[in-house]
Length: 129
Image (tube, rainbow, N blue to C red):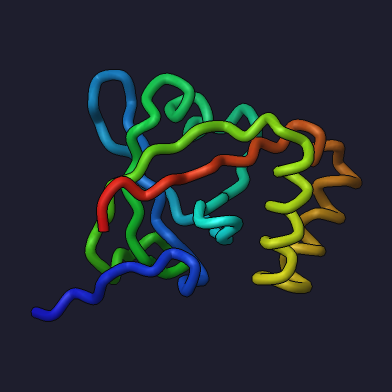
């Protein structure tokens, strides 16, 4: 079987695998965008993946469909929560540019419900390819 290599920026959905403290892997399909050589995703600030990244920065990425069915090889990476407001502005723009109306609608709904203030942005740096 021929498994394609992953170019996260070219994918609509990427499976983000984070790790619990006991080493158990948890996979979640996410939207992803590239800014200045690094990849970024967003999540609710109190989501499990955010808590797991704070505890363990090791993550893996693989191309997937909306349901998380993997369709590429996995790549190793490290993640961190973005705190720089200027970088967050650039990340939001990159996500809007890539996902268009869907991202804008997501932002509008998050703004209306107040969730946008609690949103976390996650920076991912690939450690191998």
